[in-house]
Amino acid sequence: QYTNKPIIVSESGWPTTTEAGFHGSLENQRMFIERFPLLIKDINTKLWIYFFLHDWSLWPPGNYSEYFRTMGLRNSRGTPKESWQKWQDIYTH
Image (cartoon, rainbow, N blue to C red; front, side):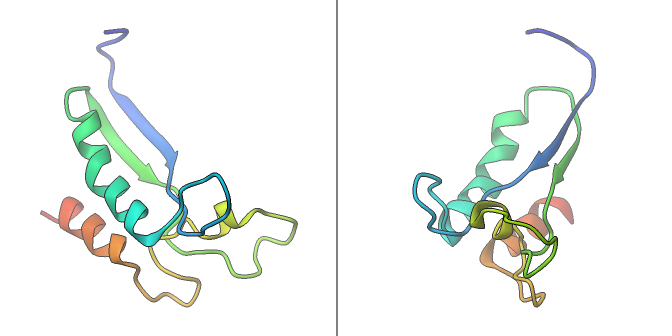
């Protein structure tokens, strides 16, 4: 209702950690990947960027919360999480 210009959604993500207060889990991440396209389907979305392909292991250095370190669609060794397949299903068809 506020614009008819194209929209880019950037830096989205969902953690898989169980850190208090963030509702992180593998299942919740998968549900986010499934649900978000439905929430934005009626706006002029040109691009949706999921910010983290991989979890962070020790990089970047610093005191980053597990919230950020576990948002990847794959773990830090590259093994896919269940949400990776949902992402592929949505964006390769």
